[in-house]
Image: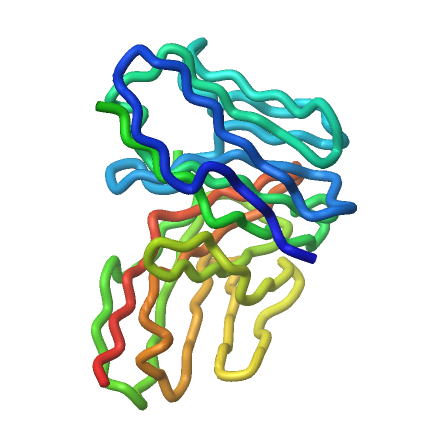
Length: 116
Length: 110
């Protein structure tokens, strides 16, 4: 398998623009996670899905952020409008089953977002 | 809030030495996992230890878990320059998500 695929790998945009990040999880994985990583705040879980259904979005910063998973092989994280403080590396990860049950996460390479 | 707290925040050792990294957490867990992140890359799973286990080995990695002290340690033996990376502990509780610490930066000098 190719692993978790994310696109784009780098994104530079101006404040106020819409940003869409994309993720293709590993085939057969039931869980998909979106994280944000910054030096100041470390790795933060934004939202996760189970079987395409959002389970916990308590980490989503505010209404400017939204995530969808229309099918088992695709998810998007959208920021509208973007702000400079959204600059970070955004990771997508997937797992075969429940992490509490002993499954592990597989991370994508990340999207490095810079909002000017 | 962060469930896992790693210690030290940064560690610099000579190639061939052992590296010990510690992690403490606050609440009961189902398992604890260690991940590595090379610069500019995503995290990679290293090893998982369940709450009913005390020690596990995988190659040059040894992880211990002390649930009474709510702490874990990761030992990398005979370190190599290629081990230079950030290391994160993450705890899994009753749900399906991991809570990560802020990580330890390990530098292995050739």
